[in-house]
Length: 53
Image (cartoon, rainbow, N blue to C red; front, side, top):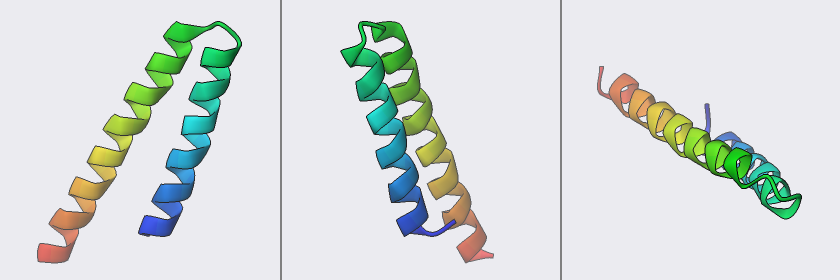
């Protein structure tokens, strides 16, 4: 997964989280933000490990 694709996915999830906050569903917005952060961390750490081997 390239950085450009990862950035686009983060922007899309950020927009969805903002939509959830805007419609009054704060719990879903927080959940989406946490999931996006965790997924980004996992993808980047996996890419770093693959490049070393």
